Amino acid sequence: MKIGVKMTRRFSPLMRMLWIGLVFVQSLQTLAATAESYLQSGDAYVSKGEYTTAIKQYTMYIELHPTDVIGYSKRAAAKIQLRHHFEALEDLDKVLDIDAKFLQAYLHRGSLLRQLCRFEESERDYKTFLEFKPGNSAAEKELSQLTQSRNALDKSLSLLDTGDFSKALEYIDKVVLVFSPECSKAKLLKARLLIAVKDYSGAISETGFLLKANENNLEALLLRGKGYYYLADHDVAMRHYQKGLRLDPEHSELKKEYFKLKNILKKSKSAEENMEKGKLRMAAEDFKAAIQLDSSHTAHNVHLYLGLCKALVKLGRGKDALESCTSALEINEELVEALVQRGEAKLLTEDWEGAVSDLKIAFQKSPQDMDIREALMKAERSLKLSKRKDWYKVLGVSKTSSIAEIKRAYKKLALQWHPDKNTDNMEEAEAKFREVAEAYEVLGDDEKRMKYDRGEDIEETGMGSGGFNPFGGGGQQFTFHFEGGFPDGFHYGFQ
Image 1 (cartoon, rainbow, N blue to C red):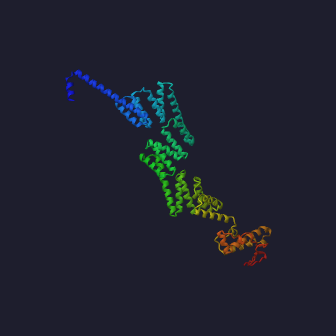
Image 2: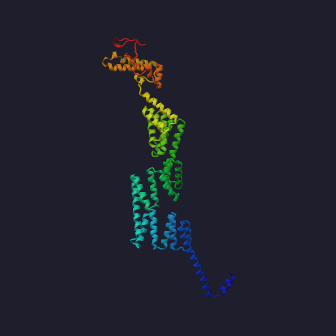
Image 3: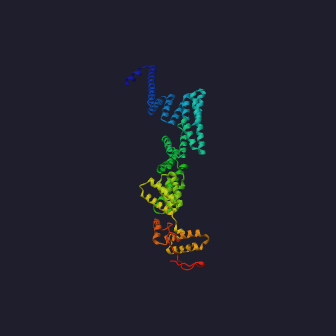
Protein backbone atom coordinates (compact mmCIF):
# COMPACT_ATOMS: atom_id res chain seq x y z
CA MET A 1 0.00 0.00 0.00
CA LYS A 2 2.87 2.40 0.87
CA ILE A 3 4.62 1.53 -2.40
CA GLY A 4 1.46 2.27 -4.38
CA VAL A 5 1.11 5.57 -2.63
CA LYS A 6 4.73 6.47 -3.41
CA MET A 7 4.24 5.44 -7.07
CA THR A 8 1.14 7.56 -7.46
CA ARG A 9 2.98 10.47 -5.97
CA ARG A 10 5.51 10.19 -8.78
CA PHE A 11 2.64 10.39 -11.37
CA SER A 12 1.58 13.67 -12.82
CA PRO A 13 -1.95 14.88 -11.98
CA LEU A 14 -3.12 13.78 -15.43
CA MET A 15 -1.73 10.30 -15.00
CA ARG A 16 -3.28 10.00 -11.59
CA MET A 17 -6.70 10.87 -13.04
CA LEU A 18 -6.31 8.31 -15.80
CA TRP A 19 -5.29 5.64 -13.31
CA ILE A 20 -8.27 6.36 -11.01
CA GLY A 21 -10.62 6.30 -14.02
CA LEU A 22 -9.26 2.91 -15.02
CA VAL A 23 -9.83 1.51 -11.55
CA PHE A 24 -13.37 2.91 -11.55
CA VAL A 25 -14.22 1.31 -14.91
CA GLN A 26 -12.86 -2.01 -13.72
CA SER A 27 -15.01 -1.70 -10.60
CA LEU A 28 -18.10 -0.98 -12.68
CA GLN A 29 -17.40 -3.97 -14.86
CA THR A 30 -16.99 -6.14 -11.80
CA LEU A 31 -20.21 -4.73 -10.33
CA ALA A 32 -22.10 -5.30 -13.60
CA ALA A 33 -20.86 -8.86 -13.76
CA THR A 34 -21.93 -9.43 -10.17
CA ALA A 35 -25.39 -7.92 -10.78
CA GLU A 36 -25.84 -10.02 -13.90
CA SER A 37 -24.93 -13.11 -11.92
CA TYR A 38 -27.70 -12.31 -9.39
CA LEU A 39 -30.20 -12.00 -12.23
CA GLN A 40 -29.11 -15.28 -13.82
CA SER A 41 -29.07 -17.01 -10.45
CA GLY A 42 -32.63 -15.80 -9.73
CA ASP A 43 -33.79 -17.12 -13.12
CA ALA A 44 -32.20 -20.50 -12.35
CA TYR A 45 -33.99 -20.76 -9.01
CA VAL A 46 -37.32 -19.84 -10.65
CA SER A 47 -36.85 -22.66 -13.16
CA LYS A 48 -36.47 -25.07 -10.22
CA GLY A 49 -39.52 -23.67 -8.44
CA GLU A 50 -37.43 -22.22 -5.59
CA TYR A 51 -39.18 -18.87 -5.60
CA THR A 52 -38.14 -17.65 -2.14
CA THR A 53 -34.46 -18.03 -3.00
CA ALA A 54 -35.06 -16.48 -6.41
CA ILE A 55 -36.63 -13.42 -4.76
CA LYS A 56 -33.49 -12.98 -2.63
CA GLN A 57 -31.32 -13.03 -5.75
CA TYR A 58 -33.53 -10.51 -7.54
CA THR A 59 -33.49 -8.29 -4.45
CA MET A 60 -29.67 -8.20 -4.49
CA TYR A 61 -29.80 -7.29 -8.17
CA ILE A 62 -32.26 -4.46 -7.40
CA GLU A 63 -29.93 -3.13 -4.69
CA LEU A 64 -27.21 -2.82 -7.31
CA HIS A 65 -29.61 -1.50 -10.01
CA PRO A 66 -32.45 0.26 -8.19
CA THR A 67 -33.73 1.93 -11.36
CA ASP A 68 -33.74 -1.13 -13.59
CA VAL A 69 -37.33 -2.35 -14.22
CA ILE A 70 -36.17 -5.90 -15.05
CA GLY A 71 -35.31 -6.74 -11.45
CA TYR A 72 -38.66 -5.55 -10.12
CA SER A 73 -40.57 -7.26 -12.89
CA LYS A 74 -38.89 -10.62 -12.30
CA ARG A 75 -39.28 -10.33 -8.54
CA ALA A 76 -42.99 -9.55 -8.96
CA ALA A 77 -43.46 -12.70 -11.05
CA ALA A 78 -41.76 -14.82 -8.37
CA LYS A 79 -43.90 -13.27 -5.64
CA ILE A 80 -47.07 -14.08 -7.59
CA GLN A 81 -46.01 -17.72 -7.63
CA LEU A 82 -45.82 -17.61 -3.81
CA ARG A 83 -49.25 -15.89 -3.71
CA HIS A 84 -47.67 -12.78 -2.22
CA HIS A 85 -50.00 -10.72 -4.38
CA PHE A 86 -49.87 -7.39 -2.62
CA GLU A 87 -46.06 -7.41 -2.52
CA ALA A 88 -46.06 -8.24 -6.21
CA LEU A 89 -48.35 -5.28 -6.88
CA GLU A 90 -45.85 -3.01 -5.12
CA ASP A 91 -43.08 -4.21 -7.44
CA LEU A 92 -45.24 -3.70 -10.54
CA ASP A 93 -46.17 -0.22 -9.31
CA LYS A 94 -42.43 0.51 -8.97
CA VAL A 95 -41.80 -0.70 -12.51
CA LEU A 96 -44.34 1.75 -13.90
CA ASP A 97 -43.05 4.56 -11.69
CA ILE A 98 -39.63 4.06 -13.27
CA ASP A 99 -40.86 3.54 -16.80
CA ALA A 100 -44.51 4.38 -17.57
CA LYS A 101 -44.09 2.86 -21.06
CA PHE A 102 -43.07 -0.60 -19.88
CA LEU A 103 -46.22 -2.12 -21.41
CA GLN A 104 -45.90 -5.67 -20.08
CA ALA A 105 -46.19 -4.29 -16.57
CA TYR A 106 -49.66 -2.96 -17.39
CA LEU A 107 -50.72 -6.36 -18.67
CA HIS A 108 -49.27 -8.20 -15.68
CA ARG A 109 -50.68 -5.77 -13.17
CA GLY A 110 -54.08 -5.82 -14.88
CA SER A 111 -54.09 -9.62 -14.73
CA LEU A 112 -53.16 -9.64 -11.04
CA LEU A 113 -55.77 -7.02 -10.19
CA ARG A 114 -58.42 -9.06 -12.07
CA GLN A 115 -57.54 -12.13 -10.05
CA LEU A 116 -57.97 -10.06 -6.88
CA CYS A 117 -61.32 -8.76 -8.30
CA ARG A 118 -60.13 -5.15 -8.18
CA PHE A 119 -62.01 -4.71 -11.40
CA GLU A 120 -61.87 -0.95 -12.00
CA GLU A 121 -58.08 -0.77 -11.56
CA SER A 122 -57.61 -3.87 -13.67
CA GLU A 123 -59.77 -2.49 -16.45
CA ARG A 124 -57.69 0.73 -16.56
CA ASP A 125 -54.47 -1.26 -16.97
CA TYR A 126 -55.89 -3.44 -19.76
CA LYS A 127 -57.19 -0.39 -21.62
CA THR A 128 -53.88 1.44 -21.24
CA PHE A 129 -52.07 -1.59 -22.67
CA LEU A 130 -54.56 -1.81 -25.56
CA GLU A 131 -54.06 1.89 -26.38
CA PHE A 132 -50.47 1.07 -27.24
CA LYS A 133 -51.19 -2.37 -28.65
CA PRO A 134 -54.72 -2.31 -30.06
CA GLY A 135 -56.18 -5.66 -31.01
CA ASN A 136 -53.83 -7.64 -28.77
CA SER A 137 -55.69 -10.95 -28.38
CA ALA A 138 -54.31 -11.84 -24.93
CA ALA A 139 -55.29 -8.48 -23.44
CA GLU A 140 -58.73 -8.52 -25.07
CA LYS A 141 -59.38 -12.05 -23.80
CA GLU A 142 -58.45 -11.12 -20.24
CA LEU A 143 -60.56 -7.99 -20.41
CA SER A 144 -63.52 -10.14 -21.44
CA GLN A 145 -62.84 -12.47 -18.49
CA LEU A 146 -62.80 -9.45 -16.21
CA THR A 147 -66.25 -8.40 -17.44
CA GLN A 148 -67.66 -11.91 -16.96
CA SER A 149 -66.21 -12.15 -13.48
CA ARG A 150 -67.52 -8.74 -12.41
CA ASN A 151 -71.03 -9.46 -13.77
CA ALA A 152 -71.13 -12.90 -12.11
CA LEU A 153 -70.10 -11.44 -8.75
CA ASP A 154 -72.84 -8.81 -8.98
CA LYS A 155 -75.35 -11.53 -9.90
CA SER A 156 -74.27 -13.66 -6.94
CA LEU A 157 -74.83 -10.78 -4.54
CA SER A 158 -78.28 -10.23 -6.02
CA LEU A 159 -79.15 -13.91 -5.65
CA LEU A 160 -77.94 -13.84 -2.05
CA ASP A 161 -80.47 -11.08 -1.34
CA THR A 162 -83.31 -13.07 -2.93
CA GLY A 163 -82.40 -16.28 -1.10
CA ASP A 164 -81.36 -18.33 -4.15
CA PHE A 165 -78.17 -19.52 -2.46
CA SER A 166 -77.46 -22.54 -4.66
CA LYS A 167 -77.63 -20.51 -7.87
CA ALA A 168 -75.41 -17.85 -6.34
CA LEU A 169 -72.84 -20.54 -5.49
CA GLU A 170 -72.84 -21.66 -9.12
CA TYR A 171 -71.92 -18.17 -10.30
CA ILE A 172 -69.14 -17.93 -7.72
CA ASP A 173 -67.62 -21.34 -8.45
CA LYS A 174 -68.10 -21.52 -12.22
CA VAL A 175 -67.29 -17.93 -13.17
CA VAL A 176 -65.92 -15.60 -10.49
CA LEU A 177 -63.34 -17.92 -8.94
CA VAL A 178 -62.34 -19.21 -12.37
CA PHE A 179 -61.41 -15.77 -13.71
CA SER A 180 -60.63 -14.16 -10.32
CA PRO A 181 -59.26 -17.04 -8.23
CA GLU A 182 -57.66 -14.77 -5.61
CA CYS A 183 -60.80 -12.72 -4.99
CA SER A 184 -61.23 -12.64 -1.20
CA LYS A 185 -64.59 -10.89 -1.57
CA ALA A 186 -65.90 -13.82 -3.63
CA LYS A 187 -64.44 -16.35 -1.20
CA LEU A 188 -66.10 -14.64 1.76
CA LEU A 189 -69.37 -14.54 -0.16
CA LYS A 190 -68.96 -18.23 -0.94
CA ALA A 191 -68.46 -18.97 2.77
CA ARG A 192 -71.66 -17.08 3.61
CA LEU A 193 -73.53 -19.01 0.93
CA LEU A 194 -72.17 -22.34 2.19
CA ILE A 195 -73.45 -21.53 5.67
CA ALA A 196 -76.81 -20.58 4.15
CA VAL A 197 -77.08 -24.00 2.45
CA LYS A 198 -75.85 -25.67 5.68
CA ASP A 199 -72.54 -26.86 4.24
CA TYR A 200 -70.70 -25.88 7.41
CA SER A 201 -67.60 -27.99 6.74
CA GLY A 202 -67.26 -26.34 3.34
CA ALA A 203 -67.47 -22.90 4.94
CA ILE A 204 -64.78 -23.86 7.45
CA SER A 205 -62.52 -25.05 4.65
CA GLU A 206 -63.06 -21.94 2.52
CA THR A 207 -62.35 -19.52 5.37
CA GLY A 208 -59.32 -21.58 6.38
CA PHE A 209 -57.60 -20.57 3.12
CA LEU A 210 -58.45 -16.94 3.73
CA LEU A 211 -57.04 -17.02 7.26
CA LYS A 212 -53.88 -18.71 6.02
CA ALA A 213 -53.34 -15.70 3.79
CA ASN A 214 -54.35 -13.22 6.51
CA GLU A 215 -54.89 -14.55 10.03
CA ASN A 216 -56.48 -11.25 11.07
CA ASN A 217 -59.27 -11.32 8.46
CA LEU A 218 -62.23 -10.40 10.70
CA GLU A 219 -64.99 -11.60 8.38
CA ALA A 220 -63.22 -14.90 7.82
CA LEU A 221 -62.92 -15.33 11.61
CA LEU A 222 -66.63 -14.58 11.95
CA LEU A 223 -67.74 -17.00 9.23
CA ARG A 224 -65.39 -19.77 10.32
CA GLY A 225 -66.66 -19.36 13.88
CA LYS A 226 -70.23 -19.68 12.61
CA GLY A 227 -69.31 -22.84 10.72
CA TYR A 228 -68.00 -24.44 13.91
CA TYR A 229 -70.98 -23.05 15.86
CA TYR A 230 -73.53 -24.74 13.60
CA LEU A 231 -71.60 -28.00 13.92
CA ALA A 232 -72.00 -27.56 17.72
CA ASP A 233 -68.22 -27.30 18.15
CA HIS A 234 -68.78 -24.42 20.52
CA ASP A 235 -65.30 -24.19 22.03
CA VAL A 236 -63.65 -23.65 18.65
CA ALA A 237 -66.38 -21.24 17.58
CA MET A 238 -65.87 -19.22 20.74
CA ARG A 239 -62.11 -19.00 20.14
CA HIS A 240 -62.70 -17.52 16.67
CA TYR A 241 -65.15 -14.95 18.00
CA GLN A 242 -62.81 -13.99 20.83
CA LYS A 243 -59.84 -13.56 18.51
CA GLY A 244 -61.88 -11.34 16.23
CA LEU A 245 -63.08 -9.23 19.14
CA ARG A 246 -59.54 -8.79 20.41
CA LEU A 247 -58.70 -7.28 17.02
CA ASP A 248 -61.88 -5.18 16.91
CA PRO A 249 -63.87 -5.06 20.18
CA GLU A 250 -66.69 -3.11 18.51
CA HIS A 251 -67.28 -5.45 15.57
CA SER A 252 -71.09 -5.73 15.64
CA GLU A 253 -71.53 -9.17 14.05
CA LEU A 254 -68.77 -10.74 16.13
CA LYS A 255 -70.28 -9.28 19.31
CA LYS A 256 -73.73 -10.55 18.36
CA GLU A 257 -72.54 -14.11 17.69
CA TYR A 258 -70.30 -14.17 20.76
CA PHE A 259 -73.04 -13.14 23.19
CA LYS A 260 -75.63 -15.39 21.53
CA LEU A 261 -73.38 -18.41 21.97
CA LYS A 262 -72.51 -17.40 25.51
CA ASN A 263 -76.22 -17.16 26.44
CA ILE A 264 -77.07 -20.48 24.77
CA LEU A 265 -74.33 -22.25 26.72
CA LYS A 266 -75.45 -20.58 29.95
CA LYS A 267 -79.10 -21.58 29.52
CA SER A 268 -78.20 -25.11 28.40
CA LYS A 269 -76.01 -25.62 31.44
CA SER A 270 -78.72 -24.28 33.74
CA ALA A 271 -81.27 -26.65 32.20
CA GLU A 272 -79.04 -29.68 32.72
CA GLU A 273 -78.29 -28.70 36.31
CA ASN A 274 -81.96 -28.23 37.12
CA MET A 275 -82.73 -31.65 35.60
CA GLU A 276 -80.11 -33.24 37.84
CA LYS A 277 -81.59 -31.50 40.89
CA GLY A 278 -85.11 -32.60 39.98
CA LYS A 279 -86.28 -29.03 39.35
CA LEU A 280 -88.25 -30.13 36.31
CA ARG A 281 -90.35 -27.01 35.69
CA MET A 282 -87.27 -24.77 35.84
CA ALA A 283 -85.38 -27.17 33.59
CA ALA A 284 -88.20 -27.12 31.03
CA GLU A 285 -88.22 -23.32 30.98
CA ASP A 286 -84.43 -23.20 30.53
CA PHE A 287 -84.55 -25.70 27.67
CA LYS A 288 -87.21 -23.61 25.93
CA ALA A 289 -85.27 -20.41 26.45
CA ALA A 290 -82.08 -21.93 25.01
CA ILE A 291 -83.93 -23.16 21.91
CA GLN A 292 -85.54 -19.78 21.33
CA LEU A 293 -82.12 -18.07 21.29
CA ASP A 294 -81.46 -19.71 17.90
CA SER A 295 -84.11 -22.03 16.49
CA SER A 296 -81.88 -22.76 13.46
CA HIS A 297 -79.07 -24.26 15.58
CA THR A 298 -80.24 -27.81 14.94
CA ALA A 299 -77.02 -29.62 15.90
CA HIS A 300 -77.38 -28.32 19.46
CA ASN A 301 -81.15 -27.95 19.60
CA VAL A 302 -81.68 -31.66 19.00
CA HIS A 303 -80.27 -32.26 22.48
CA LEU A 304 -82.28 -29.38 23.95
CA TYR A 305 -85.52 -30.75 22.48
CA LEU A 306 -84.71 -34.17 23.90
CA GLY A 307 -83.95 -32.72 27.33
CA LEU A 308 -87.19 -30.73 27.22
CA CYS A 309 -89.14 -33.85 26.26
CA LYS A 310 -87.67 -35.79 29.19
CA ALA A 311 -88.59 -33.03 31.63
CA LEU A 312 -92.15 -32.81 30.28
CA VAL A 313 -92.64 -36.59 30.40
CA LYS A 314 -91.59 -36.59 34.05
CA LEU A 315 -94.03 -33.73 34.66
CA GLY A 316 -96.80 -35.78 33.06
CA ARG A 317 -97.33 -33.25 30.26
CA GLY A 318 -97.67 -35.80 27.49
CA LYS A 319 -98.95 -33.53 24.72
CA ASP A 320 -96.15 -30.98 25.14
CA ALA A 321 -93.56 -33.74 25.50
CA LEU A 322 -94.80 -35.32 22.29
CA GLU A 323 -94.18 -32.09 20.40
CA SER A 324 -90.65 -31.69 21.78
CA CYS A 325 -89.58 -35.26 21.01
CA THR A 326 -91.02 -35.02 17.51
CA SER A 327 -88.92 -31.87 16.96
CA ALA A 328 -85.81 -33.81 18.06
CA LEU A 329 -86.63 -36.66 15.67
CA GLU A 330 -87.22 -34.27 12.78
CA ILE A 331 -83.61 -33.19 13.24
CA ASN A 332 -82.25 -36.72 13.77
CA GLU A 333 -84.61 -39.60 13.06
CA GLU A 334 -82.02 -42.09 14.31
CA LEU A 335 -82.05 -40.71 17.85
CA VAL A 336 -83.16 -43.78 19.82
CA GLU A 337 -83.61 -41.95 23.10
CA ALA A 338 -86.02 -39.50 21.45
CA LEU A 339 -88.07 -42.44 20.14
CA VAL A 340 -88.24 -43.91 23.64
CA GLN A 341 -89.27 -40.62 25.21
CA ARG A 342 -91.88 -40.02 22.53
CA GLY A 343 -93.24 -43.48 23.22
CA GLU A 344 -93.54 -42.54 26.90
CA ALA A 345 -95.26 -39.28 25.94
CA LYS A 346 -97.77 -41.20 23.80
CA LEU A 347 -98.55 -43.44 26.77
CA LEU A 348 -99.41 -40.31 28.72
CA THR A 349 -101.78 -39.17 25.96
CA GLU A 350 -103.23 -42.72 25.72
CA ASP A 351 -102.01 -43.16 22.15
CA TRP A 352 -101.31 -46.81 22.85
CA GLU A 353 -100.69 -47.90 19.27
CA GLY A 354 -98.37 -44.93 18.64
CA ALA A 355 -96.42 -45.74 21.80
CA VAL A 356 -95.97 -49.37 20.77
CA SER A 357 -94.86 -48.31 17.27
CA ASP A 358 -92.18 -45.89 18.57
CA LEU A 359 -90.89 -48.30 21.19
CA LYS A 360 -90.74 -51.19 18.72
CA ILE A 361 -88.57 -49.11 16.38
CA ALA A 362 -86.37 -48.06 19.29
CA PHE A 363 -85.97 -51.68 20.42
CA GLN A 364 -85.07 -52.79 16.88
CA LYS A 365 -82.34 -50.14 16.81
CA SER A 366 -81.10 -51.07 20.30
CA PRO A 367 -82.12 -54.71 20.99
CA GLN A 368 -79.77 -55.09 23.96
CA ASP A 369 -81.38 -52.28 25.95
CA MET A 370 -83.56 -53.91 28.60
CA ASP A 371 -85.07 -50.60 29.66
CA ILE A 372 -86.49 -50.15 26.17
CA ARG A 373 -87.74 -53.75 26.21
CA GLU A 374 -89.51 -53.14 29.52
CA ALA A 375 -91.08 -49.91 28.22
CA LEU A 376 -92.25 -51.75 25.08
CA MET A 377 -93.87 -54.49 27.16
CA LYS A 378 -95.62 -51.84 29.24
CA ALA A 379 -96.92 -50.13 26.09
CA GLU A 380 -98.11 -53.45 24.61
CA ARG A 381 -99.93 -54.24 27.85
CA SER A 382 -101.54 -50.81 27.83
CA LEU A 383 -102.61 -51.31 24.22
CA LYS A 384 -104.17 -54.64 25.09
CA LEU A 385 -105.98 -53.14 28.06
CA SER A 386 -107.29 -50.30 25.92
CA LYS A 387 -109.07 -52.80 23.66
CA ARG A 388 -111.15 -54.39 26.44
CA LYS A 389 -114.18 -52.79 28.01
CA ASP A 390 -113.59 -50.20 30.68
CA TRP A 391 -115.78 -51.55 33.43
CA TYR A 392 -115.17 -48.49 35.58
CA LYS A 393 -116.54 -46.34 32.77
CA VAL A 394 -119.55 -48.65 32.37
CA LEU A 395 -120.49 -48.17 36.04
CA GLY A 396 -119.51 -44.50 36.02
CA VAL A 397 -117.02 -44.83 38.86
CA SER A 398 -113.31 -44.07 39.25
CA LYS A 399 -110.50 -46.57 39.61
CA THR A 400 -110.12 -45.53 43.25
CA SER A 401 -113.79 -46.09 44.14
CA SER A 402 -114.58 -48.29 47.16
CA ILE A 403 -116.55 -51.51 46.87
CA ALA A 404 -119.51 -49.75 48.51
CA GLU A 405 -119.44 -47.01 45.84
CA ILE A 406 -119.24 -49.63 43.11
CA LYS A 407 -122.20 -51.50 44.59
CA ARG A 408 -124.32 -48.35 44.76
CA ALA A 409 -123.49 -47.44 41.18
CA TYR A 410 -124.34 -50.94 40.02
CA LYS A 411 -127.67 -50.97 41.90
CA LYS A 412 -128.64 -47.63 40.40
CA LEU A 413 -127.81 -48.68 36.83
CA ALA A 414 -129.39 -52.11 37.22
CA LEU A 415 -132.61 -50.49 38.31
CA GLN A 416 -132.36 -47.95 35.47
CA TRP A 417 -131.86 -50.54 32.73
CA HIS A 418 -133.94 -53.46 34.04
CA PRO A 419 -135.87 -54.82 31.01
CA ASP A 420 -139.16 -54.77 32.90
CA LYS A 421 -138.70 -51.01 33.26
CA ASN A 422 -137.86 -50.48 29.56
CA THR A 423 -140.54 -52.26 27.60
CA ASP A 424 -140.37 -49.65 24.81
CA ASN A 425 -136.67 -50.27 24.15
CA MET A 426 -136.30 -53.81 25.42
CA GLU A 427 -133.34 -54.73 23.18
CA GLU A 428 -131.18 -51.77 24.25
CA ALA A 429 -132.15 -52.20 27.88
CA GLU A 430 -131.17 -55.90 27.88
CA ALA A 431 -127.77 -55.04 26.40
CA LYS A 432 -127.15 -52.27 28.92
CA PHE A 433 -128.41 -54.40 31.79
CA ARG A 434 -126.12 -57.25 30.75
CA GLU A 435 -123.14 -54.89 30.45
CA VAL A 436 -123.76 -53.41 33.90
CA ALA A 437 -124.00 -56.89 35.38
CA GLU A 438 -120.74 -57.96 33.70
CA ALA A 439 -118.99 -54.87 35.08
CA TYR A 440 -120.20 -55.57 38.58
CA GLU A 441 -119.18 -59.23 38.34
CA VAL A 442 -115.57 -58.11 37.84
CA LEU A 443 -115.39 -54.98 39.98
CA GLY A 444 -117.59 -56.30 42.75
CA ASP A 445 -115.09 -59.08 43.50
CA ASP A 446 -111.80 -57.98 45.08
CA GLU A 447 -109.70 -60.75 43.51
CA LYS A 448 -111.13 -60.27 40.03
CA ARG A 449 -110.83 -56.51 40.30
CA MET A 450 -107.13 -56.74 41.21
CA LYS A 451 -106.47 -58.96 38.22
CA TYR A 452 -108.39 -56.59 36.00
CA ASP A 453 -106.44 -53.58 37.32
CA ARG A 454 -103.14 -55.38 36.68
CA GLY A 455 -104.17 -56.06 33.12
CA GLU A 456 -104.25 -59.79 33.56
CA ASP A 457 -106.50 -61.94 31.42
CA ILE A 458 -109.65 -62.98 33.25
CA GLU A 459 -111.65 -64.20 30.25
CA GLU A 460 -110.51 -67.77 30.67
CA THR A 461 -112.15 -67.89 34.07
CA GLY A 462 -115.42 -66.75 32.53
CA MET A 463 -115.16 -63.25 33.93
CA GLY A 464 -115.92 -60.18 31.86
CA SER A 465 -115.86 -62.07 28.59
CA GLY A 466 -119.41 -61.87 27.44
CA GLY A 467 -120.14 -65.37 28.74
CA PHE A 468 -121.94 -63.90 31.72
CA ASN A 469 -125.71 -63.71 31.08
CA PRO A 470 -128.08 -62.41 33.74
CA PHE A 471 -131.01 -63.73 31.74
CA GLY A 472 -129.92 -67.34 31.47
CA GLY A 473 -129.99 -69.01 28.06
CA GLY A 474 -127.02 -71.31 28.57
CA GLY A 475 -124.83 -68.85 30.42
CA GLN A 476 -124.37 -68.39 34.14
CA GLN A 477 -127.65 -67.70 35.95
CA PHE A 478 -127.78 -64.48 37.92
CA THR A 479 -130.60 -63.61 40.31
CA PHE A 480 -131.28 -60.07 41.64
CA HIS A 481 -132.95 -59.50 44.98
CA PHE A 482 -133.46 -55.82 45.74
CA GLU A 483 -134.65 -54.76 49.14
CA GLY A 484 -137.18 -51.94 48.92
CA GLY A 485 -139.39 -51.36 45.93
CA PHE A 486 -139.32 -50.31 42.34
CA PRO A 487 -142.04 -47.96 41.31
CA ASP A 488 -145.23 -49.57 40.00
CA GLY A 489 -145.09 -52.38 42.51
CA PHE A 490 -141.94 -54.33 41.50
CA HIS A 491 -140.17 -55.80 44.57
CA TYR A 492 -136.73 -57.45 44.58
CA GLY A 493 -134.34 -58.48 47.37
CA PHE A 494 -130.62 -57.63 47.00
CA GLN A 495 -128.08 -60.09 48.36
